Amino acid sequence: MDPVLLARIQFAITVGFHFIFPAITIGLGLVVAVMETLRWRTGRELYDRMAVFWTKLFALTFAVGVATGIVMEFQFGTNWSRYSTFVGDIFGAPLAAEAILAFFLESSFLGILLFGRNRVGSTIRWLAAVMVAVGATLSAFWIIVANSWMQTPAGYEVINGRAVLTDFWAAVFNASTLPRYLHTVSAAWATGSFVVVGISAWYLLRGRHGGVALTSMKIGLAVAIVASALMFVTGDTHARQVAETQPAKFAAMQGLYATTDGASMVIFSLPPNEGGLGTAGPELVVTRLLSFLTWGSFDATVTGLSAFPRQEWPPVTATFLAYHNMVVLGTLMLLVMLGGAYLWWSGRLGRSRRWLWLAVIATPAPLIATQLGWATAEVGRQPWIVYGLMRTADATSPVVSAGEILASIIVFSLVYLLLGALWLFLLRREILTGPAPAPEGEELPFELPSPRMAPAGGLTDA
Image 1: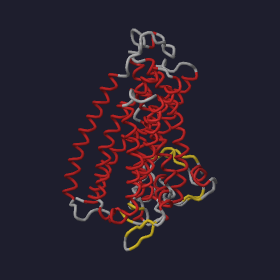
Image 2: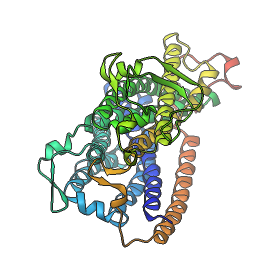
Image 3: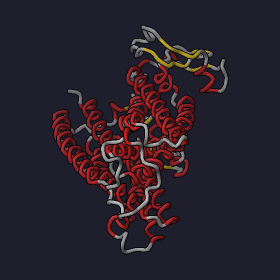
Image 4: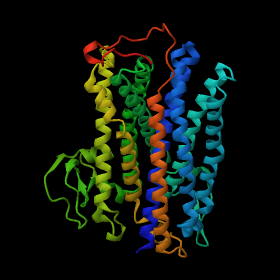
């Protein structure tokens, strides 16, 4: 057994599982802040019940994210001691900033929303919701800073075999920080908003909680459309940055082996092989589009993998598949939400059972897309753990055996399986319970679907 491979597998499992929860809470935090803003500005009781319900789902997901995040960070000291020794002077600073400047901000104000909403004024409650959303996005910033430095290191000098921080701001705002941060946050906004739209659609299909469901859907849909569009804009910016700073990764993402003038954009293709011969099978491409999107000229040169030593190639097939499937899912997400926007514009949002079922089915799409994006970034960086400075094979802990890592993988997998099942059980219970019932006699702020489109008895907010 290879201890390096096992350490990478364990890190992939722990980080992949952890990333589910902040991706949801960053988006949910924004949606709750919008709901609390509407409640604060209008004083409507409907927004109050909406905010209370979605805050409960946020808190449940946040708690699991905290537990899994602790495990993730401890791995640096156990499985990756040589990496920690090499970059500890740099890598520890953003992780500390995340805990001090973001996590405590988010968790403290979340406590006000959960336990003090009836003990503070309306403005303080609104401010708490805004600060929770700010804390969640700020937390993502410092984590992205740490990871981006591994992708495009800056602001350092190597002294006595260690990377020493020489320019804090250059390290923080390295070449990939802002493009990756904006793309990640927009993906997280999409993830949380899709959860809101999907659960609301399920309520409408079941004929339950009509007022909260449709109004929540409108808010979630607005956020989802903006976030899905931003994913493409920020993704384009990020891809150009990768082409400039990590050309081998970019070539693997595109499945491009030979350096090409006027390179074509691959829309569909069989996975490229690892032997440097390209794909073997049908392809759907747009001629010269990759050169234009990357460098602004249809005749521009795009560097292929053949320009780099074979030992510096990332796993081509895995990187190619992760990237292209992420793009496919992002496109489908935007199309689904644009369909919802059309129904909203035409006054039929909540009436189309086909679209409601589509919204329910699409709920996990952005979550899957974010996992694929993470895989593209991390697998595409190989064989480097710090790009151009330190190889992954040189970063592990020499005193931790393969057997010990395998045993911990099994234990962590079982614990995470139990934790994931518990989260889904509690989430399901909260969803089935639903928001508080509407006051008697409240007028719903929308027209109910026609009886043929709803279960017997129509939609009721109960």
